[in-house]
Length: 82
Image 1: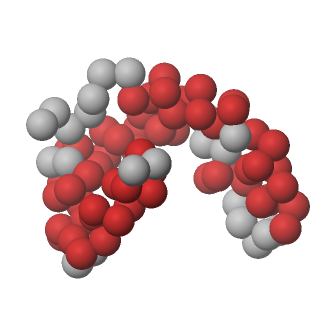
Image 2: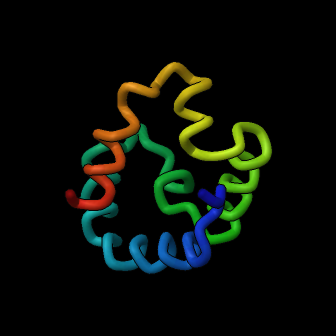
């Protein structure tokens, strides 16, 4: 598996736009959350993925090294709607 599937950053940008109303509602209900993190732009996501791939080899590697391996499948299902 490649660390960075082709189109991932672009897909992120599109999903951010489609979820903008939901994100704005969440942010209004949780003023403690930094909106710049939640509404990160494509450049930020690209740099984040570069960091994860460089340091951990993959998102799976990140979860493994952080001791979160048991949550990988549940998170994958939540994100993919399975």
